[in-house]
Image 1 (tube, one colour):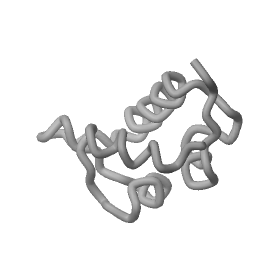
Image 2 (image 1 turned 45 degrees about the vertical axis):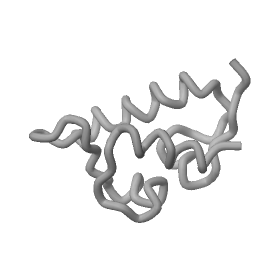
Image 3 (image 1 turned 180 degrees about the vertical axis):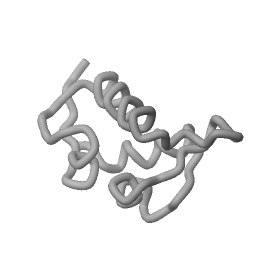
Image 4 (image 1 turned 90 degrees about the horizontal axis):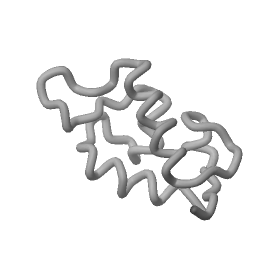
Length: 76
C-alpha cells in the first residue's frame, strides 16, 4: 500500500512519518483506546480530546464512519 503523509493536526496523534493507510488507522485506534475515547454506551461514537478535535474539524463527538472521512482530509 502506498504511504500517505499526515498533516500537522493528524501528526500530533499518529506521528509525522509517511505510513500506509492501514498503519495510520491502527495508530489512530491505539490512541483512541489508550485514552479511553470510545464512548462507553454508544460504541460507534468517538469522543474527541484536545488533540483529536482539530482532526475532527472541531467536533467533540463523531461516529467511526465519519471519523474515516474526516481523517482522509488530513493526509496527502
